[in-house]
Structure formats: C-alpha cells, structure tokens
Image (cartoon, rainbow, N blue to C red):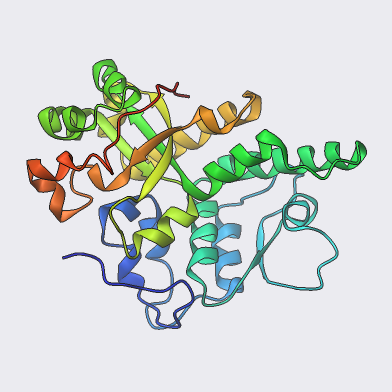
Length: 277
C-alpha cells in the first residue's frame, strides 16, 4: 500500500510509519524504542543518545533540547559548543534529524564540526556568504543517500544515470549487490508521503560482498566510520553528490514492480556524470 499523506507538523503520532517501510530501515532500531502512544519528548531522545554515548567533535555529550527562539548561539554553533540540538515538539522534520543522529552519529558530528569551522572562518573574514562547502554539507544533511555497492558494473550504471538498466534489466544483481541508506532527515520526512520526482543526493562507497551479509546495525557502523572520514577531509561542493531517483530503488514503490515505471523520462533522467565517495 502507498504510504498515506502525513503532514510535517501533524499532531498524529504514527510510529509504524517509520518502522515498516524499507526506506526507513536505517532508523527502525531507534524508532522502535519510541513510545507507541504519543510523540517522544526531548528527554527521551536525549536518553537514547546517552545510551549510545554520542558526542560531538568538541567532546560534549549530545542532547536534544526544546527549541529556544532566544538562544544566543546559532543552531550549528550551539551543537558544537554545548552538544545541544534544538528540537521542535511534534515535528517530523526534527524527529527524523534526531533519529539520524542516533543512527549515524559520526557523520552528523563531522558535518556539524565542518559547519562550525566554516562559520568561524567566515566570521573572521567578515563574510556573510554561506559558500559552496556549507551548501554541500546542508544538501547532504537534508537530502543525502549513502549507496554501498559491491559490483563495479552497477556502480558505473548509477554514475552514468542508466536507471532502467540498473533498476530493471539488472534488478536481481542490484538487489544482491547494492544497498541504499537514506541519510537526509528531510528525505525521511518526504518519505512519509512519497511522490514521483522524489530525489536524493548520493555518495557511493565501494564495499565487498561480505558487507551485504552484515546486520543493519553493523552496516551502519561501517558506513558511519567511512563517511565520517570522507567528510572530514574532502573539499566538497554540491557536485560531489549524484542525483538518485529514490522511488526507482527495487521495493521502495509498488509501481516499480512494472517495467513501464522506468520509462518516465521526467523522473529517470539522463544527465552529467559524477564521482562517488
């Protein structure tokens, strides 16, 4: 069944939305720990972070706190300096941000540290421009996807935007040798009510076939470590990421069980070639 329409700020708490569909698999472990009858509050989310001993790059323990319109520090600076992630109540966007912190803490911490360093540098130079680095960091934070691929031929198809060949003609190989992990919390929010045109921005990692046999928790650890290293050292801009039509991933939309689904050129576009991570 297609996922029902759910608004960003709906007061309706529907935890099954984030524990069942395959697109939400990276978050399912932590979503399953949330209350079944009411929205989680920031203290509960902070408790989950404490159980995982999550810290930001300044060494501060991660905590989720209620949004404060009068906060003296900007959002990213407050995370880095105090470990405090401002989180709105009954808000899907912010809840997914918290769940991604729990699932991929090292990547999130590196993204925050690079945001903070870039902000500090621009303050020192009295610049008000965001710059390409912060744009790239924000794009991945909001809309990023991690693609783990154990087959170089399939990686080439993805890089060359040969979607029908990847997702249909070589569907069985793609299911066996490629894993797709949504990272961006804005994408998770969109996935509550998926729509044709829904697109992520992917970084691809080469893995061996043994990776495919690991449990989800172990796969997340591998990806978290490798992508944290990548984002720590890479001189990023938005062209570092490859557009990925998410509803083409086998099993992520009922309609993609039919070959004709991939004939939609407005969604499954050809385009520039990009590199992976």
